[in-house]
Length: 407
Image (tube, rainbow, N blue to C red; front, side):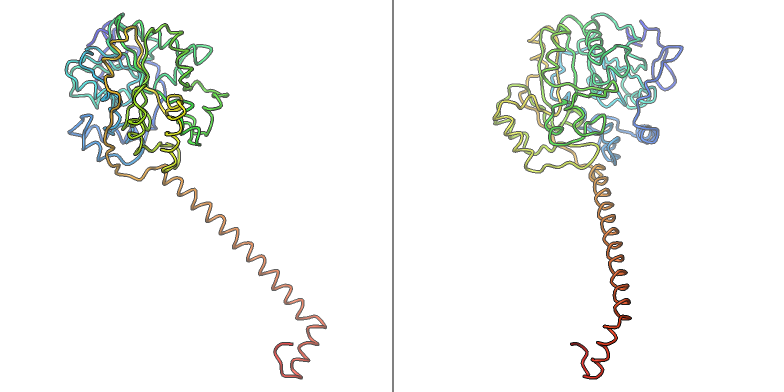
């Protein structure tokens, strides 16, 4: 039991998840019953649950398993120095990929909160051998957090959903509530960490589908029909940071994005190093095939040369606090690079796109065949009509008289 679970009088269930005795209203946020059942089987049977588990890596065969089991997920935090971090609050822990990495630091006490009961159960399963990790299921807005209790508060892939699970009038107001919550929960020089997509990211400008809506350009159009899910540009984040009264901030840029980063760039890193690090990077569209080839690297170079690189990174890793030196100690590296493990599956987006193309080709061929059949029928009808005409019969008579097949 932690200070958070004790303060809220949560009880520990048989699945190792803490919850209010009356139960929590479930967020209904899920990868689907089939995907979560698969994850449950994998995690239940796994002997190596670590953040670098080759056993779990070998079970990856689609995007949901990659997202929850890949060792690349934790690269987001591997770029940071957590040696001075002792107490962590992770809000929105999902199925425990990031939670697992945090818990592997034995000096860190981790309170992880998840709104979905099924995902919280999977997170507890992933961290079942870590005594320094506590998983709770609850709506953030219903919890009393220990005041000044944490050195680090994390929102990894969470703040974009602020408006979805809030009664506030706007997405921005709901976001401010989350940032205010983090400030109160953190110690005086504590840090709030946010990982989120950039709605003006290069991949979206070049036609990739927005990650949450699965539609092109919806983020660039500033979510005119928002369903409570919204990402922000860099300038919009700066406005939100000022409004939330954080006096210090540091931007970092994970590539290809914060979900599966193999490169994390600190703002202000030398352009030459950044450009070299970006050479193997290929942005991903999780809805369909997306490969710009060498053109992508040229686009990054153009943005670096123009001084607009930071505004169009695909994702942000943002550190917020009140003490600049604490932020800098947390992210000492200008550039962090990691190897991309081989995936045991063809990207589902590529296969889906191929199926679409195959279907289009087949439809085109079928249309051509139908058109040819129609054309052939018309020709046969015309030949039959001509064969029975007076002129055609006269021509055949001439052929027989002169012994010729053609005239």
